[in-house]
Image (tube, rainbow over all chains, first blue to last red; front, side, top):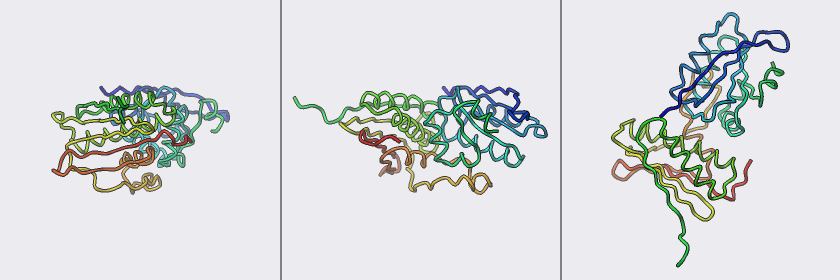
Length: 119
Length: 148
């Protein structure tokens, strides 16, 4: 019954010429999404990955367990000195992420282009 | 013949993660029929999903022999949702999550469900069953609530 979360990483370059890892998510983000969220993030080489974008364009459902996984990702990224931005959340989940305070540690942008421009 | 005061819809879910989406979809359908704006429907979906997750995980402790009852009562200007489980009920309100404490490992990254429920609906109350079971959370959203 739980929808599988798919994720894949795309490498891009920021407007300033820095490498950017974009993690694209698809499906639900819930308690069963640990591998898709944290596993995919943890597989990125820490030494060379400094800018990360999280793509939620194809995510319809995020519950509190899924939000907790995003927070765990942000905790690891902060420890590693990486900058994380997110884009593509629906207006409802922008509200929810803002309510729980995630915006203090990860900027939220409507689109990939706007997130890229903010790097 | 007088018009009924409210219309009830009931759903029973197995205590298995993922089935909260069935309640979420049902609640969204009823709210749309009542004329709630899209933003309020989204608020309700998240609140109902979190209430069902709590019922499955904490109330029924993932025991698939137990089911979660969801009763939607559509009135003229409000929708009440009761999510019923066989647990002892929640006896305390949840504080607003402190993102700084979470980021510094001083607070569990999880544990936001009750906060989200309280923040997204007009009324939320947790009622413990008198016999130590059949506890429920009661949520209400009102049609006159202005959208943000």
